Length: 195
Image (cartoon, rainbow, N blue to C red):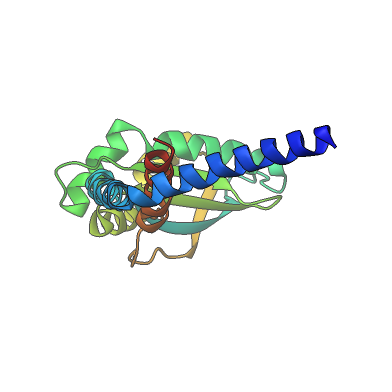
């Protein structure tokens, strides 16, 4: 009987501490709300200020052999080699100068990459940057002038455009402002409640 009363007393003591802690938290509800609101506002401002939208224009080429040279481009390794060489051509300073002049741009801080799509002879070129207009103009200028540099490097290979690039209508990366605000605000509210 003595053990039962001791257990009941211990349970009432811990229940009393929990109730007391909850009352303290409820008593400081204004501080918790303030912490949540301040965290939400700061997160929104920081996320919005650091967000840099990225736009992408994609062009699809078919890699074929030049019938005049009789070169075979039927296998995947030849298509992959072409993609690697074409990426190097795309990022060469000579082609960049030609393309920038043609596009009417003074500079382009984006990236240009090419890769083979699966086990095919289809090569996908992606031009990414922070300005959708510049990305589109660079893509069109590359299509028009890549042969001036690539003809010397990709001898016996022809790149025919299968799908033209489109003007990017939206960024490919999202700011996730809402998710960031919710997570940081919840953490701030919980942290203030614990304090």
